[in-house]
Image: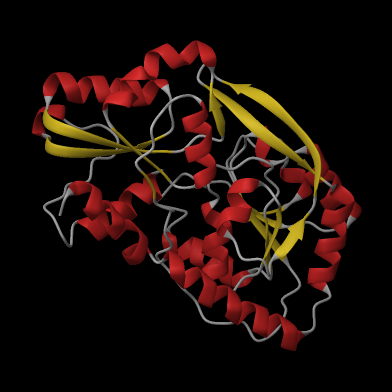
Length: 307
């Protein structure tokens, strides 16, 4: 959310008078229109109530992501969203919110800021960026990397119980002073393939960022990824089973089970890819990702703002 907030600010600030608010700030300093980049959660309500009570903001746009549904018990607390403009990063999120009677004004995908050059040879390595949440490491994903006898490079957090399955590059994923943009960009350049193990996404920005650095992606065919990633990546088949996880008191996460054996096959196929074919795939990946340049996607907010 922080990265998206910074990128939206960077783009819009070139067109309108814009201020970026991260962490603690004085609501009384705010006026005009607020774009709140969020999940539907209690922190969102807290920020909205503070702004509504103490600021001079007249209009609210919620750029909102949910990996499934809002829990029924939490729905009464977020009915105020119906009074404002909702924008989602994917049609998947739009559809889920509309199933719960929220109107979504537009779909504006998350954007990519940095791009690399095509890689001429297959590094034959895997990488992944994810925090500690269990849904980022489903059992069928862990089973696949064990069976394939690989240990992907990983950027994660210190309280991750799954690190024994990875070659850990950093335990400071959310520390911007340590895991900087340059650090992450170097990571994408280092790895041969981005292995997306998660079985639940509202959008999935890291696979798209990897493509922007010429790093092909291996990922399960979950709806939000299929919506935004190209057909030439290494897609892992789903089993057809779905399951749901209560996350906190607000979200019902929708999980799509994928075939661990098929993921093993895709991993091995990728690692054995000839250099010439890898180069072509790397080049195509960058070309595809350019459609999601932040200056192409986030300027779409200007229409909603009436600029």
